[in-house]
Amino acid sequence: MSVAEAVLLAIVQGLTEFLPVSSSGHLALVEHWLGLSEMMRLPVSVALHFGTWLALLIYFRQELLLMLQGIVAGDAEGRRLLGYVALANGATVALALPLKASVERVFESPHFIALFLALTSLLLFTSEWRAMQAGKGDQPLNWRRALLVGIAQGIAVFPGLSRSGTTIAAGLFCGLARERAGRFAFVISIPAMLGANVLEAKNITALPIGIGGLLIAVAFAFATGYLAIHWALLTVQRLQLRWFGLYCLLVASVALVS
Image 1 (tube, helix red, strand yellow):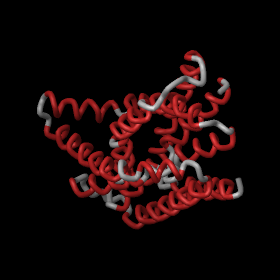
Image 2 (cartoon, one colour):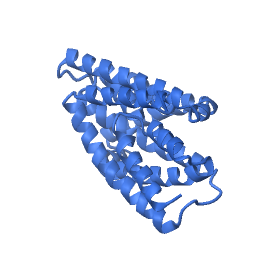
Image 3 (cartoon, one colour):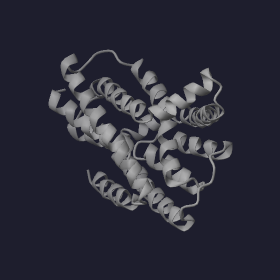
């Protein structure tokens, strides 16, 4: 793999990891078009996910510090948030692990990816409509809503089904305010992304690119990922998810004829 290919994958990963358009679906399609083998894809994918994971840590440092205060100082709000995050990720793991074999098969089929991209589009359109009907009302985050968002994250392991889009949509359907739905969806992805990356990293046998080129790609993934988080939260607050829904339909159409 060349440095240019790694940087291309990094930009795709950074932008699509947090925008509601499915990074796994985009990466699978780009890797399919570039003709990259699993042995070449996996190490770079793990490294790029580490870069976007670091972007999450820095962007949501306030929530992370709040949860840390819940552990160290017994802060009630911090402990509550930590409990919700743990519950959501417990539901995610319970769903995602049994689906692992099915997910691996889907990665080989652009047509299945197109189907899940179309489903992402439907979720974005309907959740925006639901939020518009609800106005600016804000239901509190509780155990039931945290569980439902975690279930949505577990289902979103399929490439083409956006993790951020699915979890944000779940939050909006539950009645969470736009900003709360967006931030909670990203916060619960921090342990989920780390766990998934550790599991993938165990299968790495060799690097298809030099360390220097890999670090450059990780830096691109981090920078574009950080910008994408900010853009995604603005999109949710302004209820402009439909534009990403239209984009997902366009990419799905391209995947069907590829």
